[in-house]
Length: 336
Image 1 (cartoon, rainbow, N blue to C red):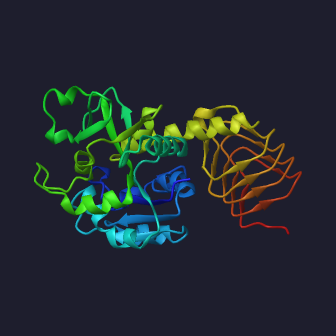
Image 2 (cartoon, rainbow, N blue to C red):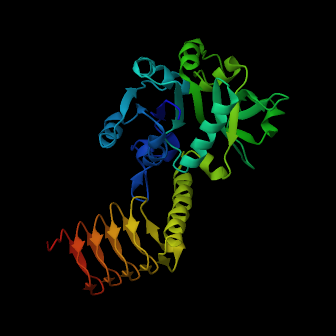
Image 3 (tube, rainbow, N blue to C red):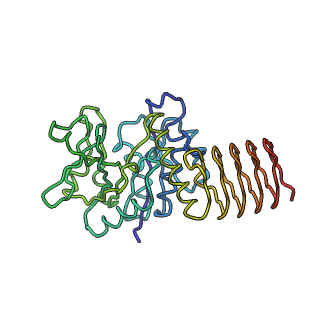
């Protein structure tokens, strides 16, 4: 097993979101964007550092529930500059590798991160890069390879030549890097480029050759920079979560109109009708029927219960064999 310290980059404002809220705090199915890369990476790491900046008080308050450290990036001068803010913490950690990923990539999966780690380990390269192939790669750094298929360079969109713009394989912004190599390379970065920023991608050229792992699903590569992208990510996550529950024996009559948070637990033989929202920390036991238009949040529903259509259940414990009438409003109810 790799001895890994993870760094999650979450300092950006997200100008195109048109919001005062920090970009990584916009919700997808009841959880902020940053929840998803955290959940994907935490099981792989012995320590996690989150780089915060814009709205740092808001982000830091949310992170208090996780066992993570924070580093502040102010001003935000690029991904390389973000890693520079973590150097003192990294030096203090007993880690061999550093896993770096953006905090605005909610669709990244643990399986892809593990695939990257495995490829990197077998390659003996100083770093590994997670890539994706997109039909429209505009805005992403392009992957440049040598004759042996190692990555030798990543060229950012603004710096690409006409030929490089045609490359469809892109950099997702996820890396696994030998810690000693990273510590030596980051201080050598320059901001002599069109954006005047310190690009983490420039250390690829310093590595001479880098391993890579390409995601199977290009949706994993999408960072969230607009409300439209947020809605797309929510729809993809909705499909993933609903598919998982159906594979475990839950009947979802209209998956396209059923919204379930990632931390919800639902037992088999539960039947969910259309236009249902189940959000937060919810536990639903066997043989429960949830009728159309119900809203359930932060609650427990015991076996053989019927939740009537249009009902609202929040912060409550519904006993077994209950039958909630249509349009019931149950809040902070616990009969035990």
